[in-house]
Length: 202
Image 1: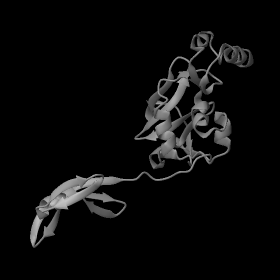
Image 2 (image 1 turned 90 degrees about the horizontal axis):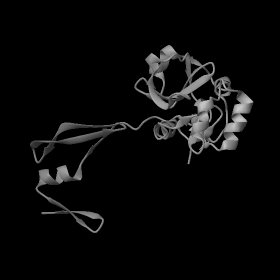
Image 3 (image 1 turned 180 degrees about the horizontal axis):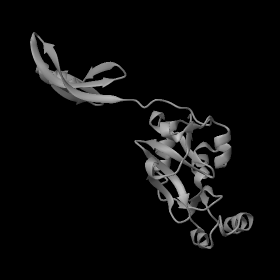
Image 4 (image 1 turned 120 degrees about the vertical axis):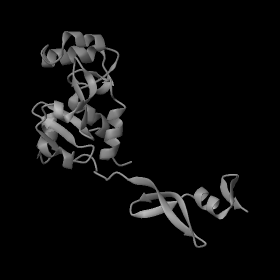
C-alpha cells in the first residue's frame, strides 16, 4: 500500500491524545527508554515528569510523521530534504503537508488546522495555523500526494417519457450519476434484492 498525504491525515487524526516525550517515535516508552533519553538530551528536553508516561505510547513532533512513513527523521532533516514554502501560502497547500519552524514540525490537515505533537505539557493536539508560529510548509518527500475525491449531491431534473422529474444527481470527477432507486421510482418499478444482486420489477 502506497503512503499518501490523505493517509497521513487520517493516521494523525487517530493519534490525537498521544503523550509527548522528546525522542519517542510512536512506541511504548520503557523505563530504559526514558533513562536513555533523559541522559542523552537532558531535563530541558526530557522533563522529569515525563517519567510518569513510562508504559504508554509516546511520540515527539517529527515522530508523528515518522510513525506513518517508517523513516526516522528529525524536523530539520525533513525540512532540509524538501522545498520550503512560506506559511502565508498555506491556503494553496493540499492536506498532508508538513508545517515547520526551526525545531518543530506538524501536519496540516486542511481547513486551517494542524495536528501536532506539541510538547510534554500538551501531547498530540489539533491546533490552528493562525494561532501558531510556523514559518513554512512543504510536501513530504516520503509520501505521494494525491487529490481528494470530491462528490457532490444535488437535486436535478431528468426527463422521462417527456415529463420532468426531480432526482438526486451525484456529480463526481466530471460525471453525473443517478441512484438506481430514484430511476426505479420514476419508472414505477420496485427495487429489491435477490441475494446480493439488486432487482427491478414492475
